[in-house]
Length: 261
Image (cartoon, rainbow, N blue to C red):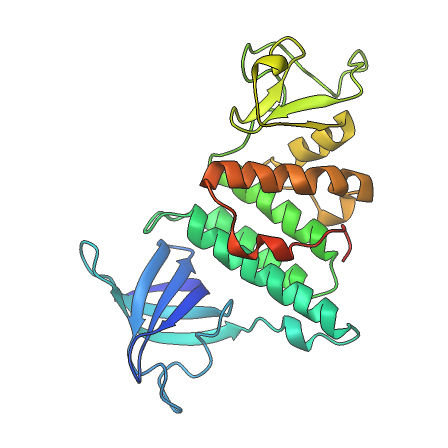
């Protein structure tokens, strides 16, 4: 038997009494497990397996592609976006959908049994922000950028991804009013190379600087995103993610349109 902290990413009814659960664990990465008796009114898991709940689990790992066996889950923190005081019903729904989006992205982005403790910690921090009074749009965007970096998909932002020409937008000599970002290439493009590429996005140097800060290991505090930066980065990051995945995530249509929604 193995023990780990875990976040519930998905549950599927398996039988009249059991569930198949997808968990993001700190020690083992993403795993799928069967929770026998989880659907019983007085089952062994109580409310620990609700979506986005944080729990301490005991699991029996199985070889090959077989589902693991979840034997115990003790609730440590429940996702309660729909119960937050002082918000309208729509605002609560926005936070709920943001949580669902994060769960979907973690399922799509991560591989089974590939642990990323830093990603687990970033997810936990983001869920706490969504469950609180932090700016919603900025919190989700900050998480996306940190996850992209931690999973090795970070774009190049300091030089042309095609010819490697330096493009230090932080330098006082950088006089460009706009910067071209190549979605397929995964990074910025210089003026000479950008006409040769399709599927590009144009953004300001300020937005690119915020993007670079968000891609660092520590991430960027959501409160530092300005409305102007968010309005540029939200569509850029969404299109970059779609390019990486090859399809549009189901919950992405519910993403906040403003930094502080």
